[in-house]
Length: 295
Image 1: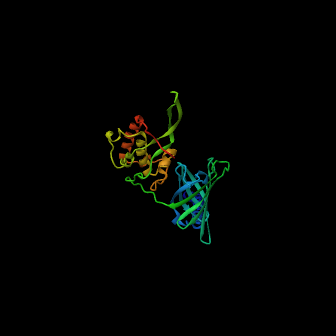
Image 2: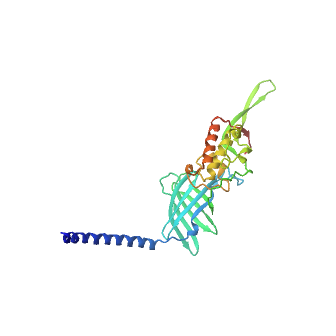
Image 3: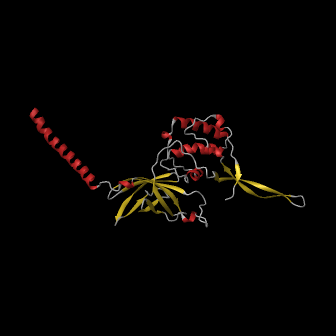
């Protein structure tokens, strides 16, 4: 009986060993055929993402430039795997690298499932990635954009603050205040008013909600926009990719800001979570301050 069992088991063991050997050989073949190359290109490449149609005649931007982050994850002879983050959207990229006479070019395509997906045509010049993005759907309002990206490491730093040389004004919201004019006949005419925009105070440069436990007296006299900026500066330090245009306009131009992910909830410190709850409570009842600005 024992002999019959062994004779029956032997073919099964032989088949298992052969299949295991075949699988190992296939894995080994793939590893040998696809070694990773140009690992020096791995990492975050960050810079402006814009269209010439967004430029005014004097060459100044109408609004803050979009910030583009292309994260190159893996390069082999046949494949480049990457990810792009812009305007709060994260899209996977797949393509190929070409090296012709030392000139490196990379073609990367988005999946195509989003109406604004497209392809990136990239050239490495020195330590900079320069190129164009072209939408798959040419009927888009802005079917082409340009970019110039430099490699930048992302490191969380609780001490990072917004630059003081900028004015933080929410250009997306305005309040029209009409002018009142008294004519010679005593009649009162209401003329077209001036536009007043939400603005932040200099407290946004002084209060750091990532390093200091905030108290009610720190926040009770702040403007609503102050509270929103102080809170979102926490998220910016963690590399949150803002979807709302207002906050992209505030943070995209900041040199230290690198958008890396769509959710940073698990990255927040206990101190930051406490401060966010307090900021949210005050934001609910705070009022905006509107000032007149020329553009």
